[in-house]
Length: 269
Image (cartoon, rainbow, N blue to C red; front, side, top):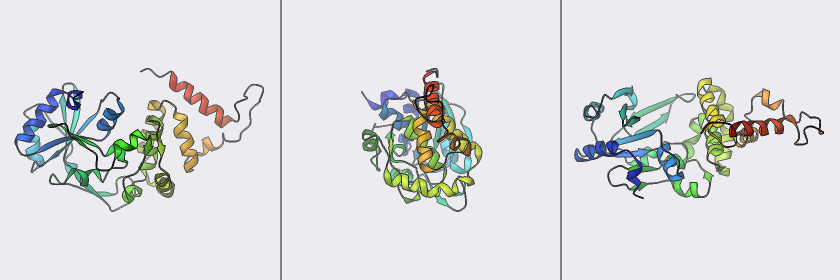
């Protein structure tokens, strides 16, 4: 099947328009990952290369609707396309300058190559792209191969600059049945002392995805145990005995993992 037929024709129309003006549009991130996995694509992020300014991009998109500025400093515009909210942004680089998830100097640059822009991402499976004009598949860090091998692997040493990636790794591994690469696991453990820098709402969002999207949330919870990042309330469950007559499965921790996985089966599709 033609890869481009999986995405709305209106988005491709915009891409062709931008192509005629000397630019290019590449679908990036989770939409590409989900396409490769055969999962229905719901959120579409598009990086726009070769358009000289944010203002010019907004002018082009205004021909197709009313773009909403969602992050002017990052060059992000939201546009409703065929009932889907699509994010259009410029490629960018990120340099660590402070603590936490927001401690980055972010510079948008439409002249960047796709590989340079993708290098800022967390995992190889999130660093793939699809050109919306010719359908070419861009995969500078071999994310597709890692998906085939059910492997979650970081891109480079800058991975440790954002502690939120520990929780992202946990929920990705559980949601997509991936094994965390040993070197990536080592890096995740090295970031643990920095987790207190993170805003609670960002941590909550990653845990929400784990509990509401993973087929077996227990996979992620066990990874959190291995990494040493379980909250004290969960730690109290480990090695707490149960009556073996009624709970032959083991301690309260094991029982809780089983309950969480059973609850996941009750989620609506």
